[in-house]
Length: 289
Image 1 (cartoon, rainbow, N blue to C red):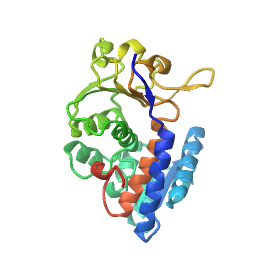
Image 2: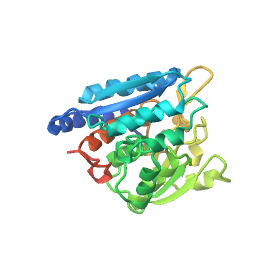
Image 3: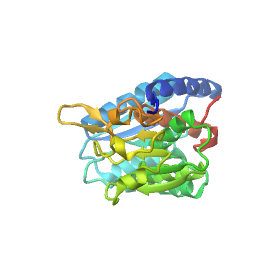
């Protein structure tokens, strides 16, 4: 039986924001984030308000540009161009998803890479994979920060990332490679998935399928990062792992909710501050003094 410790994302994010607030005070100016919201998607409205509240807590100003669900792409591109040139705006975020008539890739690609605080611009993605300076997407960066809280060194560890999305799975696998892990990337269609997950010193689940990872699929003592957010029919929010089955087997695990989610927003603030400082994300600078 392994003693399982819960990685408290809420508390860690709170402490991280306190450090960010001190960093903002040293800037001598107030960072500004522009958030573009197209349509009235209920979840998006909640996410945006959560981001604004977190930004306010560290001294970042947020301008929300609320647009109609029928807004045409040309007008949005014009707004992005204006924000790109504004010396007052440090970061630009396009809240996803966007209505079906819009091309999210086109809109994200129009944002200046140095202002792309979501880390989704193709240049940032390419630079990150190449180990060059880049804005790094917030959820993978948050996962890495949580891992660094419990694993001072990941050198030589076998990390299995279950998930291959451009938002989480792919970039996180690259970040773990840069931490000198041996990385295996799996996904929902991987055959004999348990054969891989049982080998993992670090197991990341980012598929969006409740109960995908059961207790008999993990190596005793593994560190489990559950990125999945799934709403069950009864309204309960759960991750991709069967949390109770992880207890007594994993050495550390993130809960859902309250694990990776709070760190995603914290890393958005980090990216805005780095942009205001005139720099890209920097994993080596991530553990703030």
